[in-house]
Image (cartoon, rainbow, N blue to C red; front, side):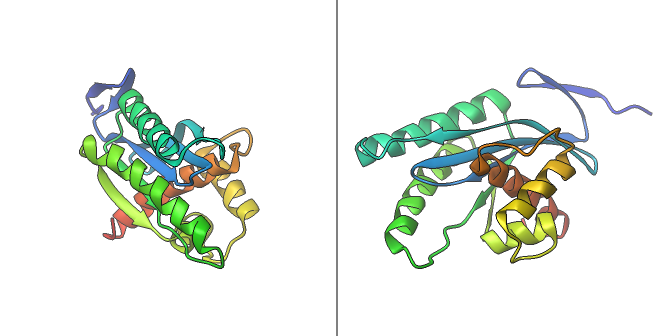
Length: 177
């Protein structure tokens, strides 16, 4: 029996399919990636990056992240989102700015009632590569392979966002989402 079709955001989906948004937050660059899941199969729908200039006032930068992530949600109508948590390394100032951008993106997700999975960078790497200490090139390579893309998604923030969406699926399947 063939699953019934569903019309969603200009896409025709099988009833057992869904759209997942991935977000790699950052004040200068917030990557986003949209993945379709049909059963166990994942495919890339779209990806991009919200860029804000350092010379722009903070409030305007955060508003841009909020509005553009909201526009992505409006366009692709995901049912859930995987977002990277903030990693507090050596640079606390950068981590704080990333946290603010992450908050702006989360508000856009909450406004649309999306189910949110929050994952540490090592959890995302583990889900995509199988190694929590994987480097950026390994993550990009595996995102390309897992989604059947002809090339590595660019910019790297978009590839990281697609990895966050893949992580959502992996963790949800294990009951962690």
